[in-house]
Image (cartoon, rainbow, N blue to C red; front, side):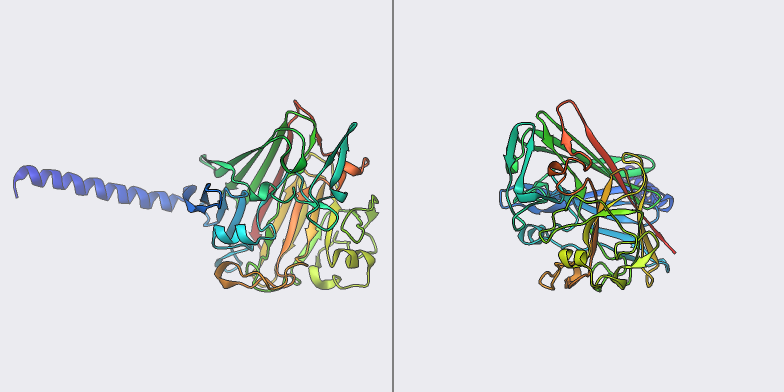
Length: 383
């Protein structure tokens, strides 16, 4: 081989070795990373991506811009073994075909609006009744079924995904052109921070949330009844048989809804209680203690076998605790998991259900020139 060729070959291998060493060094330092890949195409021809956020401790969160959906959360257990803790699917097609809101962003209005009707001033609005006589989770095609504009974000301390969706005036019956912006951030401390913001050019109502189904043991392969749950709420909002709040802010004391001290989810779920009968279990809004708009601990859940702990902090006034009462074994999810009755639970931080029709509930009215903002944090640890 000629000297000149040997020289350039040496340079090539030197650069290659340096690149590999730098890559290994970055991994050892535990840099925050975000990876993007194709996740499929909607029936309308829209391209959908999947973004995986990772931190130095090995935690991973995967999010698709179809519905802003969290598809997996990989965290360690008490033995250091990593596993998924949310229910969901392996493919975009499955989310499109039949999903009970697994992991998605909900809007314009999370939860229910009675009879699909509300008024702002003298104007009345009619929405789809897609849950018996009521409107649920934004309608027939809410934010959970829309493709959001996505932008990866990376700093020295976190990685994130910024999602933006413009909901046009009249979509699903809601007034005003509304821009929703949601930022998911993964931190070095095994936190998922969700920042919500919304603006509208007309008076409208807005109540954004995330609808992840959790199972801290095995992502939905077994019941959630042994999970220990604490909800820092002195009151909750009782419901009628169609899941609409009666308007009362009832005390939890002396009822199966008292989770001020940790209780297993299954300890009282089948008690002889009219509210449990109305909700088919737990499917109720809890009025969180502390001042609305201030970040405070709202919920803490632990699972005894894995030792995993989920702590939920929020600025919202309420949280909907749903115990997976409509899961019935008809849905097959990730890794072939069959999602049976009460194999997952939801903790939807929110304003209260049917607030547009309940004047004494915290207002969900959004006027032009205002920005509706809130923050929720899902923090994972072990004990």
